[in-house]
Image 1 (cartoon, helix red, strand yellow):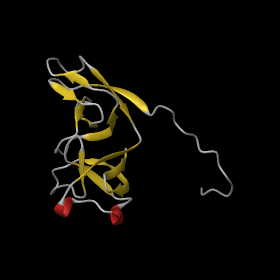
Image 2 (cartoon, rainbow, N blue to C red):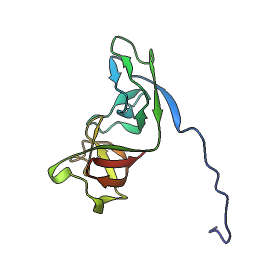
Image 3 (cartoon, one colour):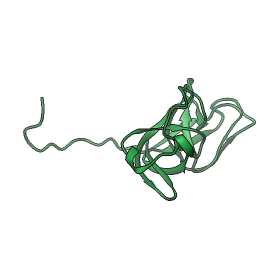
Length: 134
């Protein structure tokens, strides 16, 4: 039923979450972090099986470990990433659309012919990059 009066809509706290890091993986602070099919954190990359979850708060180095030996703190929110170029470049007209993961610091306008996972919603675009909400 639609609202007929003001509503105090609850907000879930917990913008900071901890995820196990995938085996043989290093995630840099500030990286766009995704979860793989097993639920382990991995840096953003071209793949269709990833789920973007936010930005790494600190570096997590699991290069010599098995999945889950190291954890990474990931913050949800709105963060600026690098913009792609050419046909994949995001512009202000694209605000509100879905952006797609290119790598752990770059997002694109298209899914790369069904090769990229969604990064989040385009919140803003400026000269330094694209603001994405996770």
